[in-house]
Amino acid sequence: MKAWQKKERKDAKDFGGNLIKGSGNSWSKPGDSKNGKWLVESKQTDKDFYSLNFYKWMKISNEALFSFRLPLMSIKIKDIELVVMAKQDYLKLIKRS
Image 1: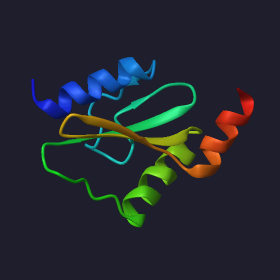
Image 2: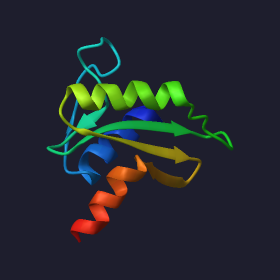
Image 3: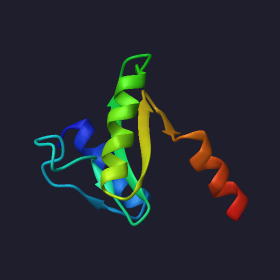
């Protein structure tokens, strides 16, 4: 199994969601996994960096919007795992706790 496949499976488990089979193969299968709240896009690299730009984030955000979920990126850079979400989504989350 390739590293990106392991990352997608781990994220689906960690976020309590399900893998989206064939994700990325067509516009009708956005994200890599999803649960009731989040559409998760998983990225993994062994490089020293991962480049996230406005257009990449907007694509993920729009896909989440059309699936009635919030966008979330799970990015693994070497051995560090990060989560990226919109600030307003984060603030709503912490206000509920």
